[in-house]
Image (cartoon, rainbow, N blue to C red; front, top):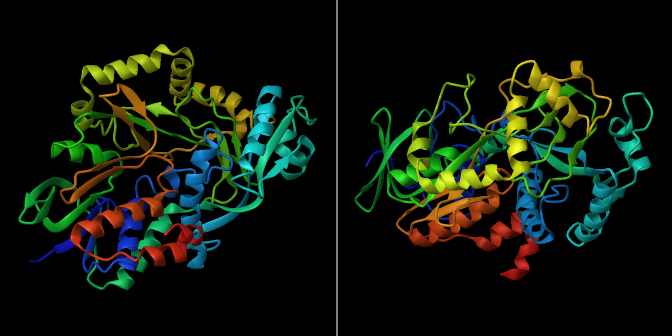
Length: 451
């Protein structure tokens, strides 16, 4: 049958493309396709404009525990090793300085303890005193008067690390490698899946234009759209979605590397950080902000693109209870309102300046420029049974030849680890072989000993 495949992956972001590559390289599955609703690969969340271009390995993400950092490091190093193995240096992957800083005595004390704890996971992790930071990142220490800022500042990180990534180009590379490996593999662009229905011993994927593609196994890596697709088939009905959109501000080239700040443990969103942009040279991004909005994908106009699928998922008492509980916390409520203000013309930039000055105290209002068209929606999953917000990735494995993945940040960092999990499941379901030993040999030698 025409357009019949063993596996079809819905979603041409970095997670879907990583699965496309992993199945092509390490399994004996013959025909694999990827379908993408846009006119090119990685146009939404994996686009370099939509994320902070960071490989999150846990070393400077202060909301990670030691145990979580151990797991995330293994995931992150797979992506890094892939890029280095493919000689993608200074094209897809970039070497930068990076650090997390504590400002003031309370945060400095936290950072000093954290640094010692995390040396177990990152033996080469470096501790930076205020004087050392002044050498590495002078703008972090210089105050608005040209003198050193009065607070104590310490940091933890690396003077050099392969930590910045253009995930859009990485996605394209995964596709190129996968197509070279198996000539029967295909990529379908402008294929927006409207419906998935059982057909024979597999599924038919029907597009908005009534085109059809057939698969024995369907892997849904469609970001914010994964849960609506699952619920259209009766799966994941106990879940809801809280879409959180991140925005950024540009400042001049004031930082030499990545500078992260201490996370408030009560807030389920990333603390403000600075990242030299790997695509737009001479610009540093400060952010992200965090704004909830009724959209599964960001559009240039705030009121355009409202997602009615979201209302179908969230118009129920459990989701309202979760939202009420979140807003009942004063710190979370104030944070949400503050981030709403950040989006307003004129006022937003002035309010955001105070947050940005934690990283660059001498920053002036005229240095800030709202990064229009940057940032994207990250779907946070709401568990209606537990009546709480679930952070991190969520998988709905049906054991019926279709799996749905929701991968908010840092899903890009975990793309090859997630691809491994999915590839093993798909291979087992189809009775195919997956060469786990070669996968580990190529991408995670430290895990070979556990086989």
